Image 1 (cartoon, rainbow, N blue to C red):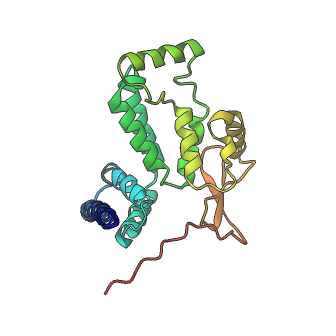
Image 2: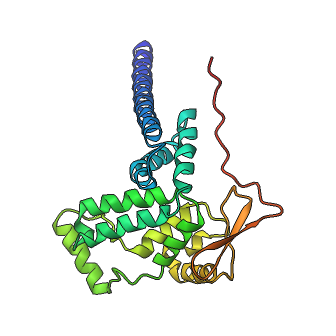
Amino acid sequence: MKSIILFATTLFVYFVSQANANQNTDTLSKESKQVAFWKGKLSELSESSSIHKLSGLWLGLRNMGYRKTIPNHSPDVHFLYYEIQSELLAIPGHAEYYADKLAEARKNTEKPWVDNKYQMIHQQIRETMVHLPSPETIWVVGNMLESKEDMRTTEEYFAIREEQQKMGMQGLLLPNPRKFAYTVLLKIGLRDYEESMHHENSASCLAWWKEIKSGQRTFSFQGQAVEYRFNPDGTWQTIPIANPPDDAPKPPVFEKTE
């Protein structure tokens, strides 16, 4: 009896390990295909216009940004992420381009809360802009905090939720510019931006933004040795930090390959 149990246990462990190995192989295969695709895209657009780069590389930044969070990702993912990020950050107007893309998508739908296409674009742009740590991005999303667009009364909120449920679409976001901004500001790597200012405590977030926008307060990004102060027109001063904290995201340690 014991030998049968031992055999069954061994067989179970074997099949689990095989399933995990197949899953890991599949993940690596998808990763390598995506890396090859976006490397090719980056090379293809190297001499293109800024608009073509902004329109052609943003999903690659989002993709590599996601893959960078997966344990045991390849060095190619890590380095390609920063190559694409640097390419986009070097383009003046990068944040405004994506904000305009989002606004255009919003203009083309009457009911964003049941529009899967809009929901997807909203998510993709949000998940791209969190990887663009620049004063431009802060200026663009900060101004979204002051938006009155898509503000809902309690009655309207519940009516929308009921409509979603009737269509079998419950769980979709009720997207608006302020929620978009909260998420980007929380995840973009700002120093001195506390999670307590996120979502529920939006008044604190808006107060923080007004100080930033007026130039009363500087801001900086983790891993950078400079801080920024906005001028009234949205341009900014770049100020060196004498003793910047060592808070840059630590790169993974990659195994050496022969």
